[in-house]
Image 1: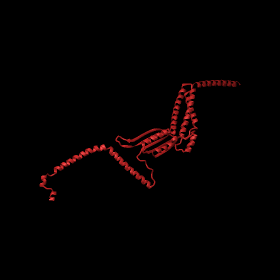
Image 2: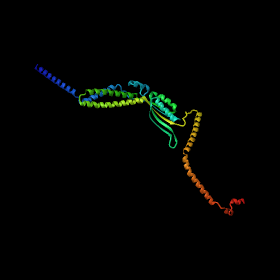
Image 3: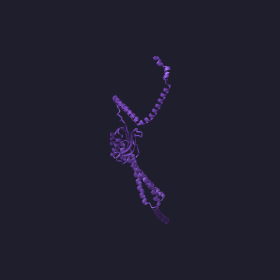
Image 4: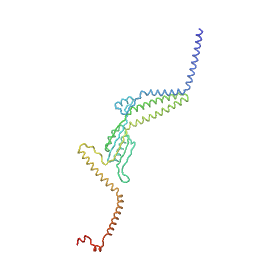
Length: 331
């Protein structure tokens, strides 16, 4: 009986001691956070952010997805429309270069687009020679105006080649947006932890993690803005060339082939004589400068030949004494 009372007394004393130590430990824990605890908190926030975005992430695929599959995947990623980047590349020939270039620039403005880059070459040089003009334009046209823009270009010249392509970035866009939302969730939770932190070590660790998350958020936001710009505005690259004659449509029958070939031959002859006349007229001063010394040399050679012939010509007395063969024959 005494042993039981003694055991009960010891148990009560031990319990009271444990309770008092636990109270002191919890009080000190509320006053400070160790570095290990801070690291654990940040790791937990990262895991929570990843778990929040796990349902939004989809496996990436290439740009060759078909329209139906792309629509399905985009809908699963929360996208209302498919994200397509349109690109067009074309070459154009025109007889009136300046007029065509002015019309193209006006059409770009009419479609609410803008010229991203441009370059031009050709025209008359310092010697008066004329080189056919050419220009290279990179224009950004609203995607919903691309079809009408390309169709209206046919009125400004002859389009010799055209290439139209698109790239589906729906999955890349959804993945980038999901990662941004996950980082935003982590950022908000770190802000809440900052408000509850009570020592300098916790504040420093949380601020370091906040800086990293903020940089990642800025990078993803910039990437999304780039995607939006590429999707909203199609890229059209145009090579505009001035020609003297537009290319004819390829003929099928032998009659059309003969007619087109004969027309091209006449045009070539005409162009040759025109270029020859222009070359002679433009370079006439050079020809005159070359002709003057040549004429002087020819004149001196002629004078020299005349003097030489005069020195070998017989006198009249010699002719009477030594008649020539012709005179003997006449006799």
